[in-house]
Structures are given as C-alpha cells and as structure tokens.
Length: 294
Image (cartoon, rainbow, N blue to C red; front, side, top):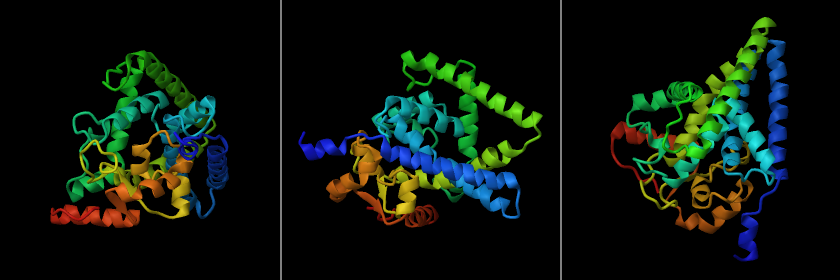
C-alpha cells in the first residue's frame, strides 16, 4: 500500500473530538433553554431532537472503531450514544457488522428484517418512527431477559450484550427515579419527546443509504451516495458518502470525501440531495414504475 493510500486509513482523535465537543455544547446550551421553559420552548425541543438523533452518526462510526484512534474513546462514545438511542452499543456493533457482511442480502442482512416501504402508507409509517421504537423496545427487553439468540451476536459476546443492557436499564431507572422525586420534567422534554420528534428525520436520512439500490455484493451498486451541504455532512459525519463507506469501512469518516473523488465514477446510485431522493422514492411508490436512479 502506497503512502497516499495509507493516509486514507489513518485514524485521529481530534476530528471526532471536535465534533463531539461541539455537539455536546449545543445539547447543553439548548437543553438549558428548554429548562428555562420560555415562549419558544417547542422550537428548542425540536432542535434538541435533531441534535440527539445526530448522535447516531458517532454511534455508527465508533462501531467501526474508526471515529477515534483511541480504543477507549471509541467505546465510551459508542456506549453513550447507544444509551441515548436505546441501542445498546455491543448489540449495535454486532448488528451493524452483520449488515456490512451481508449488505442488501434479503436473507442475511438484519437491516432488511423489516421490508423497506413499497407503498405510501408503509413509507409514512416508517418515517413516523413508530416501527423503530416498537422494534427497539422489544429488542431491549428481550436482551434484558437474557434472550440474545440473534444469529449475528457472536457467542463470546452474548453475556456482554446482556450485561450491558441490564446496566443500561439501571441507568434509565435511576434517571427516572431522580426525575420523578425532584418533580423535574426535563428528562421528558430534554430527551424523550425530542427523540420522538427527531426520529423521522433520522429515518429519512437512513432510508437513502440503500433504498431501491441493487441487491448485489458490489458495494458501489448496493449503497447510495447523496450530495449535500457542509452543515448536514458535519452532523452526519460524512455518512452521506455511504457507497464509499461500504466499499472501505476502515476509512475514517473525515477521509470519505477524499475517497469519494477516487471512486465517484464507479458508484451507480448518486443523488444531488435528500429532497431529490425522497421525491424520486415517492414517485416510484405512486407510479409503481421503475425510475432512473443511477
């Protein structure tokens, strides 16, 4: 591997640290505005939801151990973000690695467990976030009960998954007790309601990653790259470059834009924006005709 290729795979601590510190600062400042209960509280609650769902990006990146050079920082941030999203970090990593091993395989890819929308009704149901909350709560309590029999969870990690879920349950219980005893509704307005309101935006983003892509092992054809502005790229940690990520999962998020320039000509599915993607998706659902996605 030449020096230029090696640089693509080089991990750092500062790129992810800047993003995390900036995001946590926004969450704290915005959370304080919610706590003040002012006239514009609903706006701050919605913004809190957008900030909270953006924590899915570092959860994802840390599951690849590429967000930070430090193993401890990867694990710590992954644990925290997983706790916010009701996605236990060890379980999520097992789930997500299976997705990478079998991307777009209808029988093996766990992300295809629930079929992607094929009608306007199922599209709206998916975007609402109801389906994911049902699945996450059900999964959490199955694991809490010690039922970790999903095929993608490796045997050596089963007990770790169960222990982490039970530890998380203890944290959630403690937070709710403290909130109840202090008669402080911040947990509701600073976390739970914002997460519910923010989930549709995350669903819209995630659907573009593989929706209507080819069911093939070719990563340049089974994943989509979506062009977007700097602000979105910053908060999604460059995961809009999803075909690039699937082609080389070991490349850290801050190098994906560089890698995109190398393989752009090979990527079959590219969109000029998320609005354009969903406009095409809805048109295909309405007409039930194949559209030109490439």
